[in-house]
Length: 199
Image (spheres, rainbow, N blue to C red):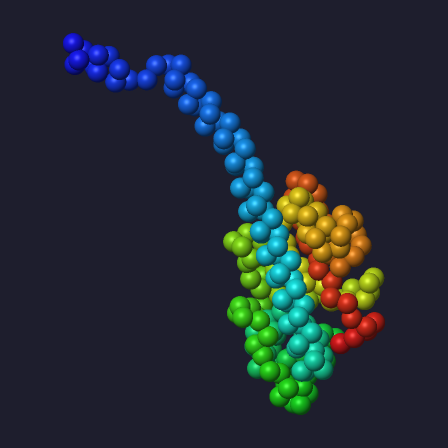
């Protein structure tokens, strides 16, 4: 009789299984968005930190060399020569003097940023396995500054970055600007202020 009672109680009823699945579904609906939101927030904080680190490195480079770098790769190592065009250049395309080259005390960043020839298009590095940061630094006159670009964040990330850096979500103004559409990768521009016409 005891064996018969134990044998009858081995499995779960359909009602018990459905209740267990319902509890798991409710817990997942609460936990998954929270975890995703924390991961997204951490990723955005990492981008903000990356922009801050690059801006600090550009400022340190300028402090030492006396000119702004034309490419992020100059923060890792000065190219000894650029094809047949001579040695490294400043932001305006002028060759750096021997004194300026001797004053380079880098690397100014911990990551290795490979040199890419040409204008915008060659990626200096990939950030977080999906977003790319072009090597070339771009000048802007409204406001005056040097732009560090990141290609690849989605619209939500760009909006959140704008909120974190500028305190508002206005894509065309402030230190962080972005372009693109909701269906494409955004181009996020972080502007380092400079004097007008600074090289």
